[in-house]
Amino acid sequence: MEVTSLTEGIIIDHVPAGTALKVLQLLHIDPAHTTLALIMNTSSKRYGSKDIIKIEGNQQIDLAVLGLVASTATVDIVQGGVIVEKLNPTLPTHVTDVITCVNPRCVTTIERGLSQRFHLVNELTHEYRCDYCDEEAKL
Image 1 (cartoon, one colour):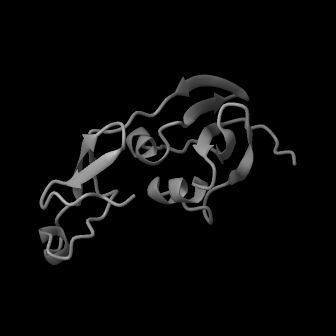
Image 2 (cartoon, helix red, strand yellow; image 1 turned 30 degrees about the vertical axis):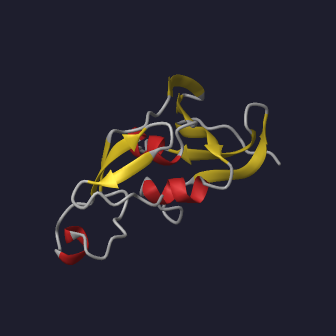
Image 3 (cartoon, one colour; image 1 turned 90 degrees about the horizontal axis):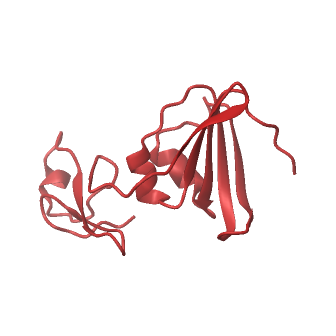
């Protein structure tokens, strides 16, 4: 399969295999309104298999959110057909309105308008807990 190169846009490479659709959802990128190429389960020397997302145009992405779901990913900024910048997402210490608390007694599930806020507890296991009820996040 061949996918042509971008002139202007973003390439998100080294996304864990099978998670590209979840990445698009959490980054709030609507495939119905965005020109993109999605390559799933392609071979990777480093990881065995991976997903690649190519987004045409000047799309802004949240590296903290990307670090949450695809910390191994790399982001290439393409301008004039050339990669001008390479970015590596990092695991955020706090996330707001990305993860939803599953505790039915949590104030965020009862009260409308409260932000869903989580903090990083364990960097090795990527464990996050709710700021309000301390429930472990299910990613």
